[in-house]
Image 1: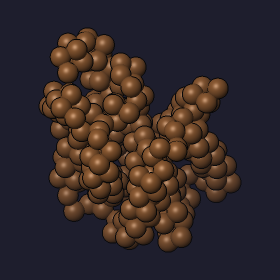
Image 2 (image 1 turned 60 degrees about the vertical axis):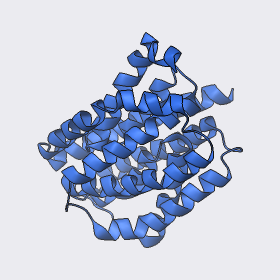
Image 3 (image 1 turned 180 degrees about the vertical axis):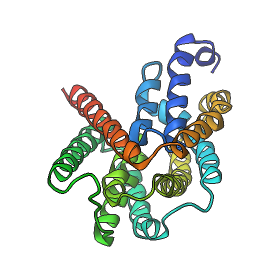
Length: 256
């Protein structure tokens, strides 16, 4: 424990990671919060990075839900949450079989196809085109989001594959995302504990980084409240595209 907390590289990797994840939790930058584990993994094993980050994510979730209190889409949550529970269960059952590299490769490919499809629809239908809610699609993408969130805290892109095309008001989308991931991260605490990930070293490191969590989350929400939909959606899709390319790169590199 002393070695980790006295290592300057730990802080060089963890502090930017927590800030970026917090901005994402506040609603700014969408799926860009995926960088938390990869950034922290520069200074420690990826599994340890995920375990240290999870309690911080839970605190961010509390701040995010409080910040967006009462602003959410109930139907989207009702349609997606059962799938998320199933996805977390599948992640727990297959934890020893599925590698983070495989998850990153799959999620990156799906997210990139999703962005390319959005560009095609913009060209064909215009910027105001919105998809209709679909329970089957919501259940499927909720399951994928729950699974990838459990394995590598990469639930954002699958969630947005379903949520972004519906074109909710940015504040409503942020509030819905806050509740969805607050619930999924809370559920993940049980299997992470059962897998022995919450030892003294990891929990102490989480506590040291905790003060950054609410500040970054509130800052993200402040930025979203001041963004117009015509700015918010292209920006968010752009961040998903960057995330997709990075996930593909990391996944392919890890499997080679």
